[in-house]
Length: 329
Image (cartoon, rainbow, N blue to C red):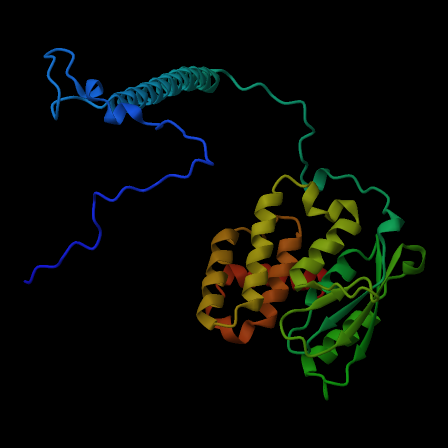
């Protein structure tokens, strides 16, 4: 490398104008030899300690101590809260054990009654509303005919049938059902409360629709759900929600809905076996009395009978035969 002359001479004196006032250096201690003198040894030079560094170290140490102190206090509060929570849990566990061993106190609630104990109360006419049912000829809603015959002494279901333009021809089963439900009118039905049902044969598949408000058009889908609706507004002695096995009835009705709307044959067979296990060897799902479950089960099985015929055991067939005899399915 070659040598270059200095670009700037360090001995150049810069003249400061006199029109400005002078200011003392801010950090004069940095140039004070005494500031770097060791107080213990009295030596000066590189062995001294910068006062600014000492001050910074003191500030950092104080901040760290404060933060550690706050953290320790917070941890102490958390530990105290955990200890209190533990004591409360132990007290609750002890109390629950004592309550479990104590004899149960009977509640002052009205027990649910079986259907034989239900009183036939007057029908609330404000709940009776005419509605429309859209049903497919391939999935005949037999439960409407069953309720019409079952309620013949309490409520008149006046059914009128029409055919939608999407259905070119009714099946033989649909024609038989239509004849039965329009002709079966009990004597004295004109003196009974009445619900007018308009049945329209329409290609809706297994999802039978019930429409109570044509303007809003909010359908109730599924024959089982239509049964639930009619059970609430019909005669009180047939309302399953007033009986003592309402949860079991709901599970059976849900299984009947699945039996109709499961397109897979294996799924239908599995659902039918579930219903068979619930029926057991009893005469019906409601015992000796005709129940809403018996009607829903019979109607669902009749609609899918071709796909599950071999899985219908003798007791199921006996239950369906009893429903057919009593309500004329």
